Amino acid sequence: DDHDRSNRYVARDFGQNYLSTVQEEGNPIIFTNGDNDTFPLWYNQETEGFRTDVRVCNLSYLQTDWYIDQMKRQAYDSPAVPIDWSRLEYVQGHNEAVAIRPEVMESIKNFYKQNPEDAVREFGENPYELKNILKYWVRSKNDDLKVIPTDSIVMKVDKEAVRRSGMMIPGDSIPDYMHISLKGKRALYKSELMMLEMLAEANWERPIYMAVSVGTENHLGMGNHFVQEGLTYRFTPFDTEKTGVKLDSEKMYDNLMNKFKFGGIDKEGIYIDENAMRMCYSHRRIFSQLIGQLIREGKTDKAKAALEYAEKMIPAYNVPYDWQNGAMQMAEAYYQLGEKEKGDNIMKALADKAVEYLTWYLSLDDQRFAMSSHEVVDYQLPILSTEVKLMQKYNSELAPVYDSKLNELYQMCVDRMK
Image (tube, rainbow, N blue to C red):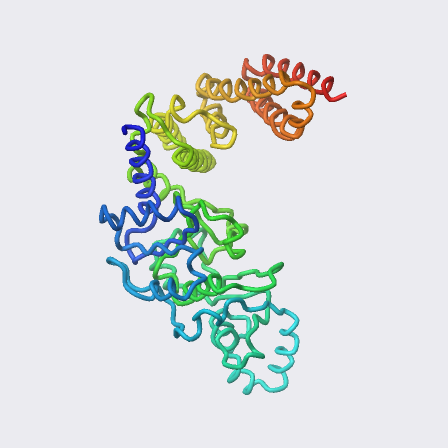
């Protein structure tokens, strides 16, 4: 029916948006993990013939030999991914997990001091270097050497390759090494080893991305090397904690404003199911991230344009404002840009929702209210409090109204909990 068709359009277009985010040159690779960030992309490539130069690599499957086989073959217009292992090295039962043993490094250091020529021949020039670890340790035929001998890997950076890559280069220098911390991890699993292998072999000339929907537990501790360009993070050799640049505003602006499609969710009254709504929330969030960065960079005209476009393409009458979907950040952006009335409209919707939830909880009988106290104390009250503080920060006329309401509801909750 029309509702099912509408949600299929949303899923199709949002799948295209993932693919649109990545660079148009270099046969990029994008890591995904779940159904919603994988199947719409495959559909777009298989059925729509869209961005067939991109290799979608699902991390959930990358733990299996049959899927690695697929990745090592051309698909559509995308060449094989850069995995140089023989099948015997990743077949089921081999290299399923490799232990991380940083205590081994001390004896390796001593070996280099005492027998430098033998050490270089056996373990390479730099025992911390990613390619050497993969070649001499992980892929060793000696089972005693099948460990990761450090929890602090480095990867030598080909600076000319970085300059040719098309990635944003913050500042005026490129680091000699990229540092990958494995601290806190006890082992690397096959999918993680394959990620590192691709990163080492791609040498920045084949862009590699991570979908924003992939959980941080699958980032392999490299989140501080990600630069967001839309619905994806790009792997870079730069430490964003040092550069302070976590988002490429120019690329992201172009992607969101000129390349993204929105499945007709601006059509009033359209039904959006739970899965499609989560994707709508994700799109509003990335708009809010972009807008905040544009304001920080002093690009207020672009920030205003992005705000208006987000409101038009992801309208509140179909995708309600919510604490979790970037709406408050958009309200603050309106305040910062001098659009107080528009900021107030969003904040009123958010505060009314929090008040409605709290009022409903207070209407429950004592037993049910007690069962819900965690939601009230740890979630709804702090949300309303944060919203009131933002209104106060920008001298909104709504602030005293909702501050009074917050105090009233807080006291009612305290009284019910006695």
